[in-house]
Length: 138
Length: 138
Image (cartoon, rainbow over all chains, first blue to last red; front, side):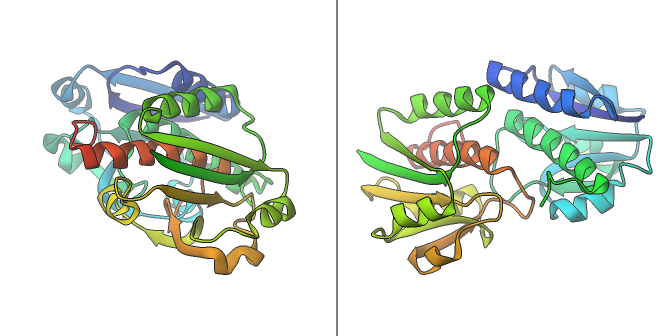
């Protein structure tokens, strides 16, 4: 089973957002195990990630891709783990810079980092459905 | 007061999404009046929009902009109405093509058209906060 870790800052504040994240986690459950690591601030995030490598950073300065390109990049069916990092209000902490194998931008628009969590999960679900060839992604 | 009309296809299916949309409508309430027009299919959407003009279409082939560029483009404080159209699963209906003054793409990623509603409302709220110079958009 694929293990996806998502490291970010701050608890999930909104009830609707927990419900939405729960919905996509349920849909992915039989195929992908999601682990959330919610740091209290940048320095805790940095210390947690000190020994990690091969991270994918969600960053406004990252690369813009289509869902099909994302699917190819992640290769969810051929890998056993993926680790995404979402920065706080001011982006990804600079001490982590060298740990990222890829910087990915969801959009040139600015999203709340809370909403970024939801868009990330929906895209993971979409990638899986693209690989399955289902009707979800037409 | 600014009136924003959002025409799209299909009811809001998910409870979390109604809650999230409700949250942003509440935040905008004193400044922006949101009207949803939910058509049952493409042909109803086309007939509703027959006599309309100056529409903004949300379309994957549209222009990608930052939130600051969006804010300038919409000029929410200087206008009295804005009308957005979100297409269904296969995009915007082609008979409407000439009615759009601008085609806007949220991202090269594909989003559900339900989630597009939420991203649109959050961006409207963000634009308003950018114009106000508040701390919401840092």
